[in-house]
Amino acid sequence: MIKRLLLLAPLALALTACGSGNDGTPPAAPTAAATTAQTAPTPASTAPATTTSPTPASVAAPSTDASTADASADTRTASSGMDAAAKAAMVKAAHDFVDNGQWVEGKNYFVIEPQQPKVSDTDKVEVVEVFSYGCPACNQAHKIIDKLRADLPAYATMAYLPAGFRPDENWVVYQRAYYAAKALGVAEKTYDAMFDATWKTGETATYDLATGRPKPRSQWPDIHDIAKFYAKYGVSPEQFVAVANSFAVNTQIKRADELIKDYAVPATPTIVIDGKYRFSFVTAGTYDKGIALAKWLIAKEAKRLVEQQAAGK
Image (cartoon, rainbow, N blue to C red; front, side, top):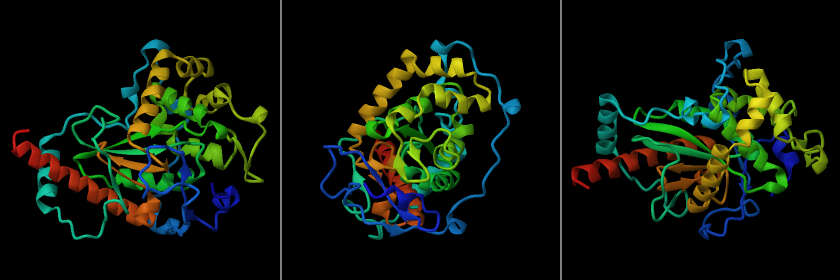
């Protein structure tokens, strides 16, 4: 893994990835150790305007029943169905799709064979970010992910798949925290803020931000520490911890680990389209190219689905 000091330097942004050591990684896919840093686009050309996080008073009180917490409350996962306009947009995208050779399979993107299940229950083309709040490269890219989500066509939707494959960097607790926040309906409100708490203010940080090195394990944040962060968004720490340790969240974590393995994710952040295609900003070349590649793969998948439907399959 590249040095964290590079990742933390605000004037030395570079494309990076946090490796998983996934044994299912195709030979051509990059690992963290083999990644070559490339200059990222400047924030002015890529990052959307920063939005103000809501105050606790503006956040609806979550359900008190931890066993029935509903993950669908997180509005970052769009509704499952497509309206007529979205269907028409998909048909048009399929008709207009052109493969001009700019994006090369096995180099810029990788086909997942066989196709794997989606993360969410949606009829739309699903765009998934495999990420961790504890991953410095994901922190570096999270505003770009916001931009990608904002630029999705009507027939596509965004979902998030938290990784836990770096227990040596405390990723498991961030994975658990994400699913608890999602179940309690505050994952959307806190997606950017949680990155800031981990990499700017340090209140949920596993790394010592002054040195760029992990803190001693005894100083790592646990789920109780992270619950204090989510209390700012209207969730009682006791409720957050109860949901985080619930059977439902344990089940989601198990499924996430299985999907990440089945997607053969080599590093984070990784983008997965409909359980069919996978790429990273490293393989795309730059952040801007990553957004362009995502849109191209979304259209490619639209063409496949429309042709499949026309064939009656």
